[in-house]
Length: 346
Image 1 (cartoon, one colour):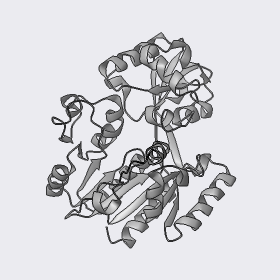
Image 2: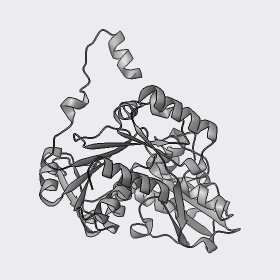
Image 3: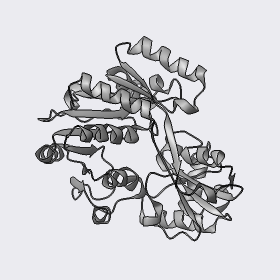
């Protein structure tokens, strides 16, 4: 809105389309999962909601916020059901981070840019549709249940970022994620904001539980930590799940900045808050190659991959690779199940 201020000061007019005119109505129940910032944990929340629905016999299909880069006419409609579809649609690392977890769970995920076509296709095979949001945009479909994820590590961001604040105001459910890593004072700030701006919302407090597949490879070793790209870059965080796992298993982080090449090096110049961690950037084949070169150049014993995608599928890494995954804790899953029952979605 800083740019909008310049436009208005110059005397020009413009309009912002509201939710009423941008949300498409569906014939099937829609559960929208969005967030107030990128990196809050909306995708892990989306997938847990899907698991609950499946437990109650629902046929779930996910629709992902658009992510294509390239010829958008050729990318109007995409359906990811198998890993080979990632190659078919030439998915970037950022896209893989979002689609791979759905494919692993055997849930089809739709994407593209023409959401009128996409919703019609999804309606044919789903009994319930989950809109898995992107960044902090509001949902593309009129929801029967609107879940909005807030990051406990970034208090006040829920009311100071556009359009994330729109989501915050519209939420039926506000899920405060990462409460197990947050300060009590920060949680108090978020709870006060909920009471002030959206007191009718159901509040769910969620722990983000981290799992490491080979923790024995980390202890006392020199470790290159790779994090989710968007979370560290435009998400504004200086660390992610990989750093938390590193501390838990007592590894020694190396400074990825020393080994960055090409566009990866430029990322550190652009996002000055970044420190030792390496954001998993891969918006093009060239950038993917530069990410691979940076990893292989690094002087370390092991690579800790905390990006949502499995980088070993697309990069040739010359060091042992340890994968970090994360998901919602059991208490929050039970709370979400109660919410779905309350809204008569299961």
